[in-house]
Image 1 (cartoon, rainbow, N blue to C red):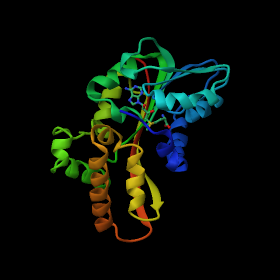
Image 2: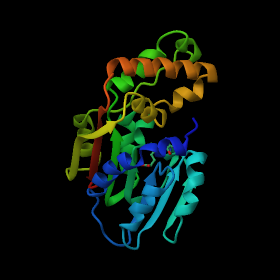
Image 3: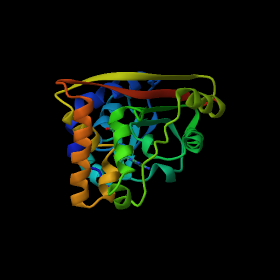
Length: 253
Ligand SMILES: C[S@@+](CC[C@H](N)C(=O)[O-])C[C@H]1O[C@@H](n2cnc3c(N)ncnc32)[C@H](O)[C@@H]1O
């Protein structure tokens, strides 16, 4: 799956707000060994490193395209490496991840695995979008299930692995301990019109669909998607509330 850093950054300021909420959950201390899972282009990893005194921060990402942009962020105490978060070994004082684990399947297995990467007394701090029931996401699954896209995608439709906050809370408590915070928040966005929704999802949700479709089919898929969005939101501007899940747990087990 190929990420496009330029497309992803079109809504940069909107994507900063959840990061700013997430870092408030960190117990800031000097000399932390930190890993940022799915660091993307590294801008937010740099902001994270800058707020943690004398920390040693490693950003990892599986995408060569995103990682290529991290060079500008490297400084003493901040490095980057291409790696899949599912193949990690080691332990860190802080395991951090912003807007990434929605791409990884089976969160009942993933969350305990991420907690194992945290040193005893350390923290796992995560944000992930939980907007998969919004029509902007449902329309994508609907169209993907219809012809000719169904055949073009070999019957594949992306099923979101995202759990409810009660399910995450259970997993965090069972594998990490009782010192946990978890909440969902709807971030309000005002877009010029319904095409703005298609722009937004083009940088994230649609990426794996684009990877599987031919250029012609991609074009037709987008035309159909924009049409449905326009029918649902003919007005201008369009209000887009975006739901996200944020959590932090201290490893006491
Ligand atoms: C939406 S971007 C978020 C980037 C950054 N954390 C931020 O907040 O701007 C998602 C990133 O997760 C990365 N990613 C997805 N699955 C991954 C995996 N299994 N291992 C490592 N990185 C992954 C993608 O390559 C992409 O750079």
